Image 1 (cartoon, rainbow, N blue to C red):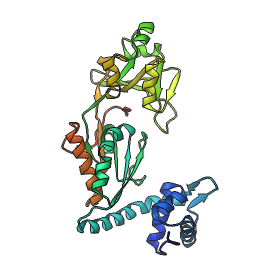
Image 2: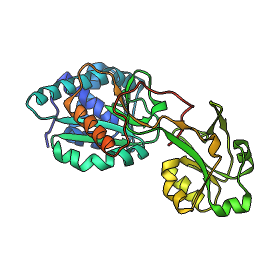
Image 3: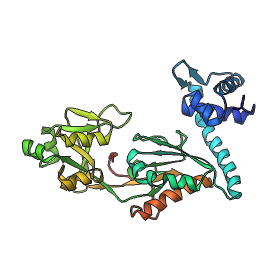
Length: 323
């Protein structure tokens, strides 16, 4: 392992960006192929030359100072641009190479990343995928990601958005035994009389309010119940155990509906919304590694019969339906 990083401004800034994104010296050092001690020395040199502290270090965690946060925001586009430029040079040699950083919801990963992962990496040995699975709506550029897979209604207007699948729908579900014991709600307002399994968006304090549509108008119902989860599969399992009514993406409970383990409720009020999209910032020249990944994802989505072929502008609909 090299004993030190190049003493250039670029090397120091790249080292800082790696630590700032990972918030961990060991992981950042591994990604840069240097020793943690060499990386720490490089960061100290950068802080000394700037005359300010960029990172707060304790024995257990690393965090950014306000000056560090500002610097990261300013240098991230430049570092990405330099990386893309070097990848363009490599592309002229006929081989896409470099790192593609992907953010995706867990459901999007199951549908569109997992099926193409092994063949893509086998076909592109010089590309490294750095994939983060998270249901939180993140700042794509600020987080240092090249692209994201998320619901169409959660995409910023200035992003390129490519639909990977058809519109989706959320439905309320419960077991036949629950319905026999408690009855079925006839309107969304009746949910206030039922125990519901609620879901919380990552990073938010209050559970998600269930969204329904009547005559083209979307409205929310703030449900109550004995259980709040941050994992959608756990919500389905809770419904299967008869704990209460859950609100889920229709396709995620399709097998349970077909087998009769769950029954759908309030169908007339459950409208479709934009499905999973692949999105990325507009750019004049796309890195070959990123282009290869996008083309492969679209190919697998299309051959599975899920995708539209044309890019679309970022979609808007209700306040953000979890799928």
